[in-house]
Image 1 (cartoon, helix red, strand yellow):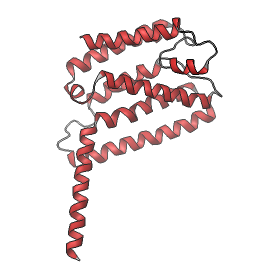
Image 2 (cartoon, one colour; image 1 turned 90 degrees about the vertical axis):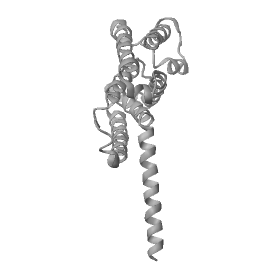
Image 3 (cartoon, one colour; image 1 turned 90 degrees about the horizontal axis):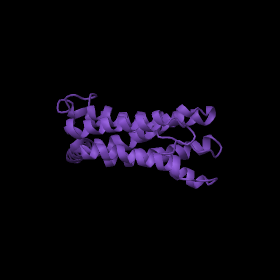
Image 4 (tube, rainbow, N blue to C red; image 1 turned 180 degrees about the horizontal axis):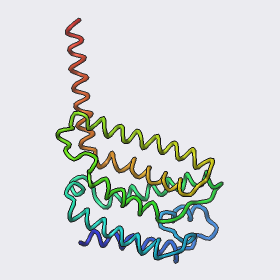
Length: 209
């Protein structure tokens, strides 16, 4: 119970501080530093502070108490670190798209927790044992697709400048960080099997010579 509460309180405290107490003035650097939690340009604290904090608590409570896979593979700290990193990268990309303007807001943090909830459901592969021989390929295809989507949306947003596209970029960046970490054990096993298979094939080819 403590960690879900702390996750929500951290979000509330950081968002309130950077939105209503922190004063960056005209400093772009300070605006960038505050960007993952700063809603000063958006307003609407009910939708940008209270509702996301409630959602973060609900998701964190479920993950810590009812999802054994998440507890084994990740932590709320990791989710926050990757979400904040993705938000900063999103803001950095936004500076190129908006001619120096910095994309502010809590949407990437919120979307990252939603994405974590969906990933931790593990509905893509219900029985990993039966699909063990293709699971590594499956994950690599997913990551490759996410990377291509990231490049596609980055190019589109550069020419069109839709803020929604920039937020999609932030979410994709989070998933590119989180999915390999979350599935690191399965990916490592896949690469070990691939290495052993390559070694056996090379040994067999040498023996035939």
